[in-house]
Image (cartoon, rainbow, N blue to C red; front, side, top):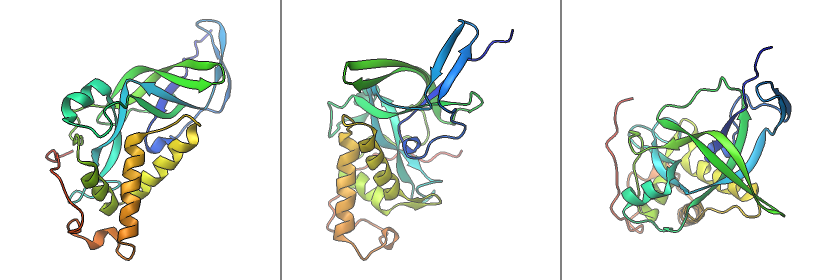
Length: 235
């Protein structure tokens, strides 16, 4: 009798929250012959990680920006690692990341530039905190050539506001992600994400008649700090 592979589960913390990955397995029961159990398969499970932060700290030169003007997308980072190379952070006490755990076809391949880890996903219900075991989560590492580290929120917000790539405007990615996180649970929250959303929406109000690409540089009224920009490496 052949063995059935255990479910392959991936935690979505960025665009996967509002744009699910391909090959999500439909919710139902799956026989696991190794332990002679029937496992309940949930196609999508909202939950959160402990000990991690989600930050707009990765360049996007092929989706939400260009090689000349890369946008920014989120990456998931160990809290301790982020503290070591962020220098300072507007929300130093953040250590929880809300997202969605998907059960998907095991043929799904890992993305380049990410490391696979086994993580625990937590969820809140009326009885307290339930722990769900998650077996594959993409985690950004500082050896990723697209990783840029910490940037001042105002500068980062402007970068997101003015960047456009083949997949659309960088700010639309931010807006969709912020709204998707709000919809996950009454308890879901992300200080970094919501602060950037407020900054970018304020830029929309200040410059309603300009397209993001109308500015080659930040408007003079926007005070800029020092950016931490890693050199772009060839893929």
